Image (cartoon, rainbow, N blue to C red; front, side, top):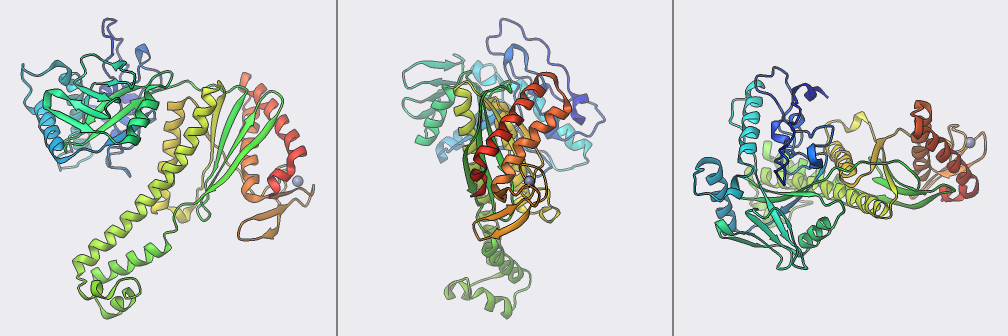
Length: 476
Ligand SMILES: [Zn+2]
């Protein structure tokens, strides 16, 4: 990575510091002439932070595709907390106070990360100067220490933390600023689960300059690749959605333990409406209006102005984005569940993705969605302790002998292929998952990485054995 040269080694922490200060803010060096994206500068170190605590990472790609700060970095999970108007205003006061008007009277806990924040901000500013951007950068969120009160009354986290998340009363409190915010049930449940993980993640609260709050959990687990092993395979497919399969492999057998298709929403209709609205906004004419009559009620059409049309077009495109992001969330949640279950049982976990690399997707909203999905799977793997890899595979190739198959049945639901050489029949959508696992371990054997290649040989022979006995599993 280009950013590595700009990364300082983290200095060893003083042993008396119970909770080490985050080291993410040390990333990047003043006066460096290298043009490294802000995102890269804030990537965590490639080795564990001292004392096993992960460094603080800045979320989001600034100046890149993802400008929102909530994008998870490579080893963290983020939850947004909904806050009411009063609390939002108080949080803004808190933010500005810590950032601008620091004095001797502040509770020490509030200033815990203030220095890191300043360095982070300097970095962002410097980065923008180097890139020749004139507008001032947005001030990054302020990290705060947080402690949790668990449902059984047990307190977890730093005793001096200015923020308390009370999972007994379902609320978040920052007493020094009179903030008490009720938390939604689903968030409370998620935070209880997250606090019960072993090893427990590190938590930090982020207050944004606009008075919003996020809870951020960091964890970085070492992933093993041993038997028994659970593999989640994801085939990206633009037209038919993704498919997700999972595999169980132990010393003596392989099994395909699940297969499902996940479809993103169909945006054809939405796109058409958005395009019509946009064309009306750009150049209002009767023809556009006539076409819009198919989608809009007459009273709305009557009063449609160019401004309103532009607004509606924007809204429609926003909905497409949201639906796509829901799709990614669903996929990630399913994979997380699979990995967590496996790791809990002491199994290893592996996530494999067959990425689409189609030119036709370039620059589209869907491509952005797929990239976000892949990035989130990588983050998930680090956080949950799974291996992750991309692997090329085709559903048209015979799983048994690798010969290119011929399509023999084509229905709306399935495309069945047959091998002209060995006669095997398989469903293209399922065959690709077998080929992914096979190719991944075949590549490992080729690379001859000592221990791993012994395991890989074993898995390959188990896979072939499974295919002989269970070829029907792939066929329908
Ligand atoms: Zn064959």
